[in-house]
Image 1: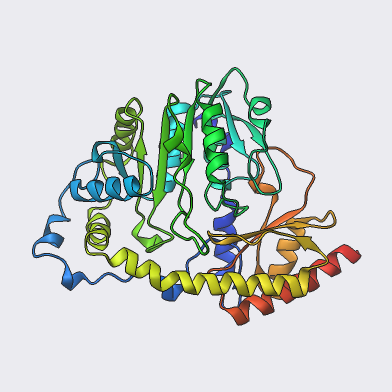
Image 2: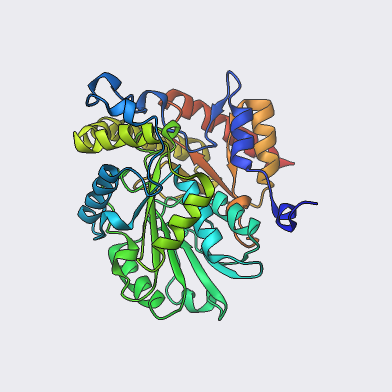
Length: 387
């Protein structure tokens, strides 16, 4: 009775853990939740007269024209020249993953991904029947020469998260982006760059998008306002190669007609009036301080049990444990016994990996909660390893 792909449909482990972690008294390092006091609160009274009334009718599938112009200008300033005609407004960047999967994946088609990579992308690709190939390193970046080994003749899509990657926090350098783009240009495949964390840079700005260096390969680039403004707005965007954009637009029309117009008006106002840069200037020091607090706590409590890199941006630490460990059991015991939520590393790998890893979010808890939670994590891990 049901479609065959339903057999490949799995629950989101992140959403499952977040549901459990929402209980009172739980310290959550699990999801990529922004800090509560860092959420953008729009001033509805300051909107232009008639703006709200205009949001109540059906709108264009592509998105509000003014917002598309703002997004195109923003991306062009970041090093990805594009026009508003290439911009498609999304109900969150997760919708972009769904649309690209529908565009490019058929059962048995191979998709090349970083390993580890964003687990919800893996979930979506598997739903549509993709055979996943992964390249990997401790930092989540493709080592030199590994692209050719990962690509097969029937690979038609590669998914990349090269800026403050989820989960590893890695950020490809400018030269790495250029070199990888040159390799990708030699192959017949779509390059899909997912970039929701670009503006959460704590040391230096991120290099221009990888797809800006492509000369031949068709590409899709997407970003989100969830992490920098508020997830509840459910608003993201993609910009696509002209050969791909019409198909993505039709898929969007078939999915939901258009994205939420009120959210679009609020975000457009934040871009037009300079509220977004002001908001980022307020929240970046908060997240930088929490990143540094977690780095200090990790060194103090877990320095002999794991290794990690200090993320230059994004919301996560990626820990590789010094000894093999059942991180799913660690997650369950830690939540049940210590009231601390973490993400095990296994779901982020496209193919099985010998390493034991965990992902820790640092944006949602304050410094005191971070230190207490990391201490409890260290204690639980020592107990598990002793057994």
